[in-house]
Length: 357
Image (cartoon, rainbow, N blue to C red; front, side, top):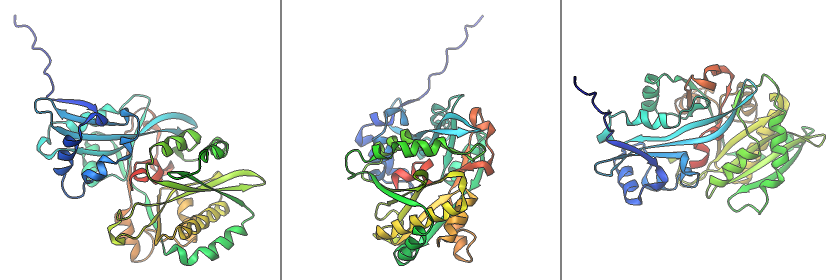
């Protein structure tokens, strides 16, 4: 009787991406082709400043060649009122000469845990087709929204915001911020997250621990946060930052502002409109030529449109925004099994888009 054959050893091993030599990373970036990030972008990505477990690389065991990369942006989500760990997949690439070897699947499986939500936001067409075969749900579209020339309207919008009955407190966190600036926000951030109403959309938790982590990996970016208060209690905030020059080719070296976060108690329409106006005002103060954001929340879309943002529903120009609107997907296992597309709140802050652009 023949003995069973020993398990076949894989030709590929997974290692922390942070352990990859610079020359191997450079060679990998060079073969990825059009649309992929450059070596300079990959080598300065958010995961190079994060914990080693946040990004994994596949290496061909025989030659030592780097053949795959996958990042997993960690967070906590509130789903049906329960707090669960989550990972947003990003920076997911496979060497074209090693396609068809199930490397992409192994990279994704590395981040899977039975108690963890696995999701993605701003996913490429190629990635969509791949993860659909693995059982992911979607794609579902968000709304990319743009406010042109925020400097022109900032005075009027600032006046309207001042008449809202709200008090605004502004902070700067991240690169170049005064020491201890984030600590001034800690209680407000946690109070806002704790006070989100039962039945609110499933969402990434945006308390002090999330912002502390984000600031620790944001590199040269700095955020301006404006916290709205009513009767002294925080009721919402909006976060704005300048994008790196050149990341939007149509603008050349001119800078756009990104509205990365938009939080309001109970999605109150009046509060949302005041925060949207405050966002445009801050973008104008930063001298941005445009302000952009993405959201899956219908209440957010209405408030942003009232503040001058163009949406995919806008005549003519809206078609271009619709084509570029990020899509979202998730693995419907564990915590993800309970999710519904019309009850999820995504913005740029939920993925690495916020950290890399």
